[in-house]
Length: 409
Image (cartoon, rainbow, N blue to C red):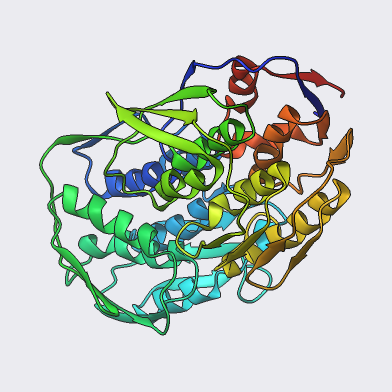
């Protein structure tokens, strides 16, 4: 499905409810398997979460998780601890080219039985669950935080708990802290001090219900829409907390650069364009929130603002090489952009080319990040259905704010 986007009139004041955070939901689903008394409300409606749920509830020996990287990492650790269960984890072609060796090595160090079905260091994996008795492991701190969180999630179910030493520089700390805080909500004794995470064993937890906060990454596209709109424009989003566990909540501060204010009230946020954007170069280190890099880069381009974004090394191994994908697609629109292995540098734009086809590379965030440009020019999004990976109602919600779309095929 390809979509041509255009905007005749922005519907200011629209109220949109966004489904629960994929990051929180997927962590809680693993914990729910370990502690059946846990109930979850406002679960994410993303493909990733559906894949994870399916793999957890199916008796099939093969679990296909598609493009769901979080599911692959979390399930690898979970099934490694399930005595008597043998599972083959597989996914899309892209997933079979996303490295997982660092996590597998850490689990093997704990005694796990994991084999590579095809290419060494990559899925698919054959996992034979067993009792893991070792309680200390080391892992690089600058790798995907999902590897670290995968170990943290199984830690309280191990008879001796787990001590994780993070070697070297640590990135994506908010996602590690998110996992830590969710463990704390279940009264698991866990701490993260310096380079070491210590988690004590806990066999049972009291029955309780956890309400998942809505996804801040999904909110980023509305921040971009308001930034690209005229002064006075607004949109209301539910359900969000001031004291969010999600690293992407830094959007509130970053988008002040573009004249957007965030008002918290009654579990919602009101985004308002209160003033013109700053003409200064936006300089941000996004090591703790790499998923919003695409949105920010497109916002800057749409407003003619220069930016230097760093801390983006994990974007090279996402659904696509997101840095190269951004360079390619923004260049087609007329941008002067360069990228390195961990940074993006955009110069001020003068004019945006119209009716350009934006390739999405099987990456949901490419489709969603570029959609707000429809406020400036007509634009075509190829393979637009890819948004279901994290945000199934995205195009419906775009219609509600006035971004119209016509299906081309």
